[in-house]
Length: 178
Image 1 (cartoon, rainbow, N blue to C red):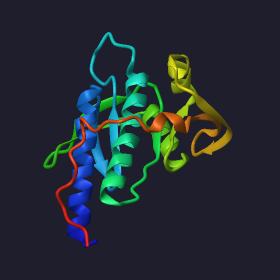
Image 2 (image 1 turned 180 degrees about the vertical axis):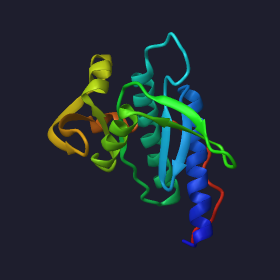
Image 3 (image 1 turned 180 degrees about the horizontal axis):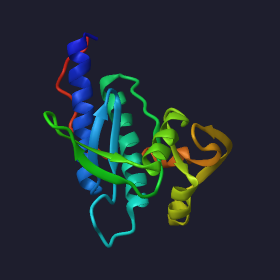
């Protein structure tokens, strides 16, 4: 695959992730290399289902990638990390403006991703407590060493949740690989 084909493929994958953010009322903050950073509940809202929406969004990410990989004969995989908590957002910069988020919740979510398992969704105890009684099954992980946090109990979403059909929302890439 050429660098141009890789960029086109990543662009199309991100485009489909962006479409999923609309479905779940999630805000994309930015992409950082191959990382996709988004948040639910950043706007004042009476809704308290932010954790559930991000979990369902994550499941649809895996469903999209499953369809994409089968149709394009690729092996694209992701790790997803979720945490629930408060953060601060704002626009910074003078010449090149950028909206970003800060806070312990952001750092913890990042650590959930970085200590996660490829092909799985790892959630913090805080997120687990908000969604475990909504029909989702989890596997408990004991004592994951998390930078800046020490040992944390985390949970992996059961793999059976990762393969719903989402053909109605995906648009497959228009690049050719050789």
